[in-house]
Length: 244
Image (cartoon, rainbow, N blue to C red; front, side):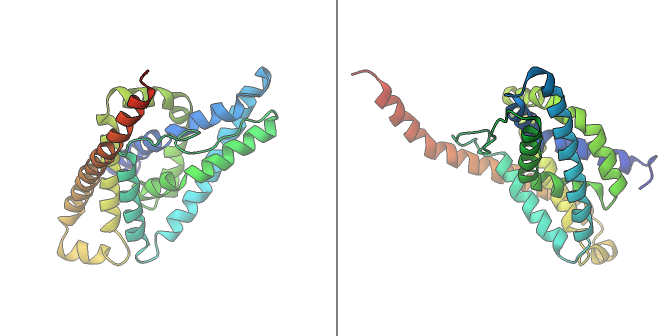
């Protein structure tokens, strides 16, 4: 993909947006993993933990780009991405640890780095699939997008999460972006790309729009149902807590 083309920069912005939306957990994981380190070792723990996590993600994305060339795998990946986008809009469950991820603090530098890398590997599947779809088979574009997004992930994710808490529409926009990319992946699979290009080129913009709308509408509907189910439980808990 040509660096001077608008498509290149649109893909870069998509990758950075994906990292912001799906990478918000990383800063919290790093903070939790390094919180028991001596003050002098915390910066080292953050640096090497982020370095190892990003390197692992690049390797995972390399294999994802290779695998996505296999027929039907982009379609399967698109379905997974739709599910991830819908899940992103669901209310957070009450659980120990951030978003259900158990992150143990370590008193040693190597232990903290290992914790960060393992936690990132566990949480990176959604990120890897989304970036692979946005990159359109360009490994150089993937690496460029990751390098640009690293400081955003590490130092900006807490700010982004505060914005999401204050402006919930930011979450819906991020989820819709995943649906858009899923739609684009489904029409560029090895078994669909040629037919779409020859017979229905309009699907290149129609299906992504449908994917974005599907994620947002389905995600909001499921979230409303979940909140409706949780409301009676919350009311019962309040009644129990009231003094007699």
